[in-house]
Image (cartoon, rainbow, N blue to C red; front, side, top):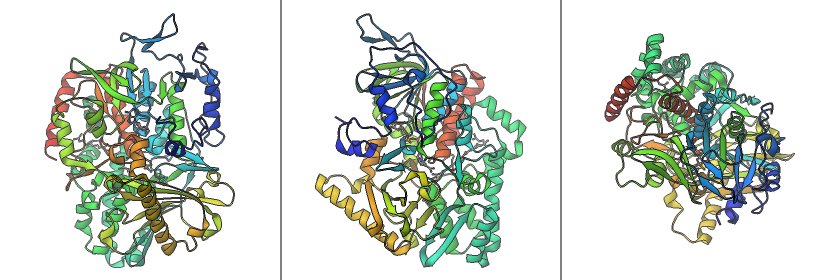
Length: 618
Ligand SMILES: NC(=O)c1ccc[n+]([C@@H]2O[C@H](COP(=O)([O-])OP(=O)(O)OC[C@H]3O[C@@H](n4cnc5c(N)ncnc54)[C@H](O)[C@@H]3O)[C@@H](O)[C@H]2O)c1
Ligand SMILES: CC(C)=CCC/C(C)=C/C=C/C(C)=C/C=C/C(C)=C/C=C/C=C(C)/C=C/C=C(C)/C=C/C=C(\C)CCC=C(C)C
């Protein structure tokens, strides 16, 4: 029912229940029968996913890929039956609790995929269970009428070939993949109140010169604030990044890089707005710093952890923002393929409804169709609210989760408009990414107050038909504004709000925009809730008040033995690079717990107690 719903099909990029996003993906699987199980036939020489000329799923015999139960797909190189299942002589499947994986990962967002691939390369047997039909979650893609749209933002941090913080590049490299990227000369072009226009150039000196030219009286303040960010970024960039919950690594880093670790420990409980106020007095410049933080945290600078702010305000100049050729969706596809190449598996259309607990330990999962899978550890890439509110049927929320929910609320979702427009509507030299807040600084955090706009076809023309550009417009929006109305009212409201937002962009940036539209599709928080399986369509946690920097953010372990969380409701929060780091940390902690990385139970217990205590100070 879910799959055949017309909106669902349209969101997926499927014209009808059987027509594919990517023809190669489905055609080959439909041709395979459950009964025609093929022997394992690995081919590790397959090159990485090429999202444009996509044939990566085309060789079902290459990857051991088969259709199951008429509609579900398991991708893996071992066999078409998963390890927890046994084929009976009558052809039926039964589940075998004795055969199990090292880890089951619920969800294939970038957080889940990085955790899974990192574990797989350490030698673990991993099964990823994804509710949707392709990997990536909010970093996925969909195709329509010759356009390839990124589901979420197109601004990719951590995708350079430099330093230690290029976590997307490293995650791909770990599984033998490399994607071609296009350097973005401008991270974002701000269009702000009082006609303040600032371009964040790739070159740090150009950006600083431009900002100082707008606020000459604050030259020293600007230099000091951004230098403080560099101090933190350089400290981060000097560390080997692994689990901060694993004492042998953590103490080892303190021993090897004491100054850098102490720098990070010092800034861990601090927020960017407080530090900016030490050096800057001009209220408009402080509002600009708010906008700088808002675009990556959906809150102002006073609520944005200084470590996170430094990470993004510097990486954009250090490694630069780089866009993957063929679209953001190629990252998840490459990781999923890399996972399979390592001998692990991914099962699509696998909706986990329960985490199975045995004697207080997470031991397996149950799907909506009744199938069960078992593993030594369970990693949830669903949000913490979904994990503890839906997948675990516990009466009492563990104390740690109560604390998390006391400190953090669900960040709003987005209204997103994906459009195809006639190319001539864009003036020459239009930047790829824009942030628009026209009149009042006070509207920054209000629903629909500010507008994000990405035009990825400025960088990669292959994403749209000839003579067309993609405009991906989004603005924060809450689910409360979209529920409790008839379907007709809902559709009318979507059209009305989208028209208003497009009108604002027409006035501010592109005269004639409305009449240049050749394709338009509008998604609301309900769309995000439905297709990303995220409660209220939220894009992660947002501090309820003023946080103590990152101190209150939970890491990956949970109060349930054997259960870990990964993704944006874990340290360090929202963002592809942030969830990639959460995946790296999670894989390291899980690997230590299952004995494939060094561990020390005594130090573990001491560190976990210390971290728990530190969080209570947040
Ligand atoms: N430019 C950018 O930085 C950018 C772009 C896109 C996304 N993002 C970020 O990515 C972050 C989210 O990444 P993430 O890895 O935490 O998660 P995600 O929401 O992207 O992916 C979670 C995946 O888990 C699946 N899932 C959830 N519940 C499930 C269940 N019960 N059974 C099976 N599958 C289930 C979903 O279908 C989804 O594919 C967001 O914070 C967003 O900021 C950032
Ligand atoms: C443990 C203890 C207690 C202590 C110790 C000390 C130490 C050693 C520490 C350490 C630490 C660390 C390592 C940390 C780390 C961190 C990190 C890595 C972080 C990161 C972060 C990131 C982020 C936040 C990101 C984000 C991003 C985003 C969100 C993005 C988005 C985008 C967008 C939306 C775009 C826009 C668009 C337009 C404008 C159009």
